[in-house]
Length: 178
Image 1 (cartoon, one colour):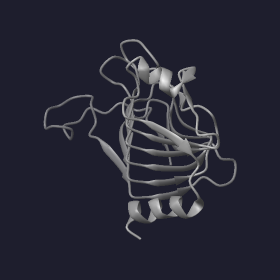
Image 2 (tube, rainbow, N blue to C red):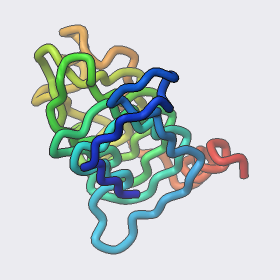
Image 3 (cartoon, rainbow, N blue to C red):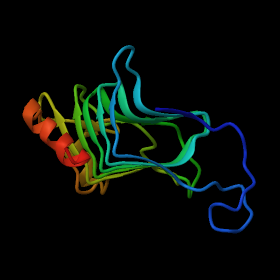
Image 4 (cartoon, one colour):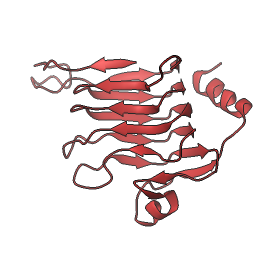
């Protein structure tokens, strides 16, 4: 999935009052395969905002969640990312418009959670994910997950070794109701 949000909207659909804030959009209960030339499973480009991406089974890709060039307010939760290079790669945001990444199962071929705002007033909100790697170890913001969590970050997340394919397919069936 690829979005491009370059145009401003003056609308009342968000809450009945006229504003430049659009209504939330949802991407949910999909089975996406990022096959040839894999880059991202969900690619929120160029200012894309107000996406709730949840309860999907997303296979392959360089990273699961991505936004850049002014993207913000993108929330990824409850997804299963299978065989991605890393969980996410997002640009910086403004305070009050952070991206969220939580409650996901991330089966990664890489060694780090991804690239995102690790500190500052618009820090990316990351928590409660289950990461799976070939080694059973993962880094986040340049340090091992346990060290990052000891500083009060990514609370509730875990890391373990890669599950077998049958387990991952089971997660997909549960997620999508097969």
